[in-house]
Image (cartoon, rainbow, N blue to C red; front, side):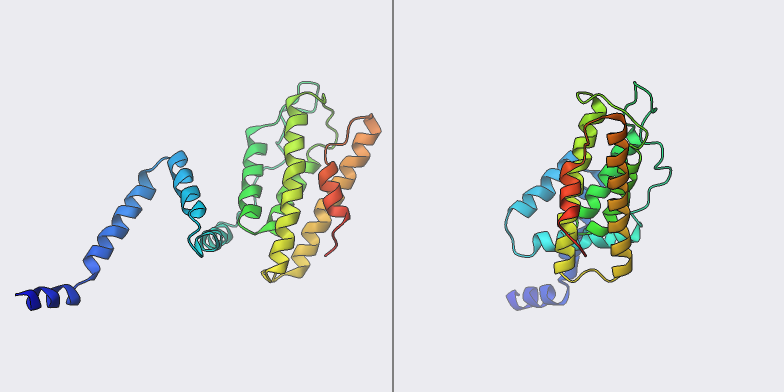
Length: 204
């Protein structure tokens, strides 16, 4: 009997594995976003070799499939250009998309989105203590992190289209320069100091 049981297990090992996969898929489909974030962070923090690399690789594949660098209607990023201007949900969505890109190692793909965010400030004036100033400081930090992601992408040999990479970098530089000139014109405080510094000290 023991031999028969061993034989039965060896000829049909897949149902158990399939059952586990089904359960994991059920978890993914039904867990809320906070739980999924906690689960993924726990996996990455476990230090298991290859987990972080596998996660970012899967993320890049997914983002490439969904063409995540594009975001329609990116011109409606502030509610108005008057004294009561405020960042819109669309701006927050654009920044989330950019962070997903540079966070997964697709820094160059994120630059166009960040350039759109910077360009949207041209013609806008803001209070240095208000919501607009706060979100612009966040964009500034995003630019610095995106440039670091670009450097790592380049060092890892994942840049296949150098023409696109140079164009994306130039587009962001032009947007930041135009913003600087605009802010100088109305006597405001330039919000992208970290970004312009990151761009100035790195050439592709």
